[in-house]
Length: 326
Ligand code: PBG
Ligand code: ZN
Image 1 (cartoon, rainbow, N blue to C red):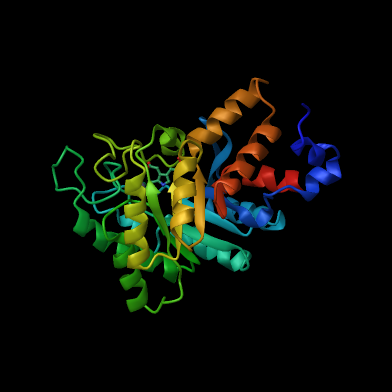
Image 2: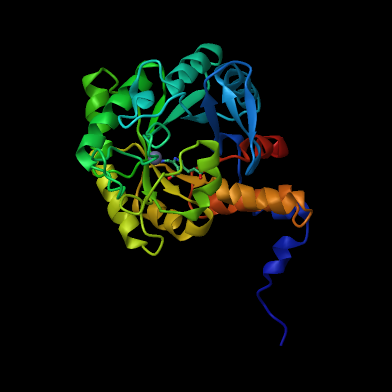
């Protein structure tokens, strides 16, 4: 017997395939990460992330213009301060590097949405995402003292002009603390994009080169999630929603597509997927060796993020993707 149902009928012509295509990646889905460093006229490529640079504020502004002209609506800023200390002063100081970059970008490209990563790991001398008991070498971050610092950081970032606050440290109650801080300071309308389900992942390796934020001892497993857990991600998002998150993030993306799907099914909030540094570097390395077709592999991956439920994609490929879509 020949088959009655022939799905191949709708695959016979390129235009027909276009008509039945379910998922489309557009520029509006993309968020481009940038790394701000002190200085002027400074651009240094990150050795483990070809095509990604640490940039001084003037260069960040140039880059922001390019990103905007490519039709990408938003950037997310990370900062590498001149000095690190146990109080993460560089994170919450009014003259902090991210605050400087934010103000400069908003002045030059007011219509570009500036998201700021709100965490302490780039600013602490030990590289952990929070406050440690002085002399503690176990890396066990103290939750509630960290909330105070995160609150200060978010307010300083909002004052500098940040459009969206994105806390990434996986501290308990961080959305609530930051929401309170923003509201008390007159930033009731500044949204929070919570890194709600962030896993303790080896895929962050190259980012820690870029942000110079590797923990000096211990690891992040007392605050970031165990890659073995899926249901726990739903607990995390439930709490963040209750605390007032406006958008939710799943991170990393590629090895966690089931989590993206489950989070999207469980909430009406916009969901962002962070296509992290290690995912980027693996594709870049293979592409530079001629082992995979970079454009095809990246576009397939982006499409799959959207198919799995992501509304937004944070990716180091964003500029390339925007160009390829045309
Ligand atoms: C820090 C932070 C990390 C990333 C973004 N913010 C990683 C970490 O836990 O060290 C990772 C991004 C990437 O790998 O691209 N809270
Ligand atoms: Zn951190």
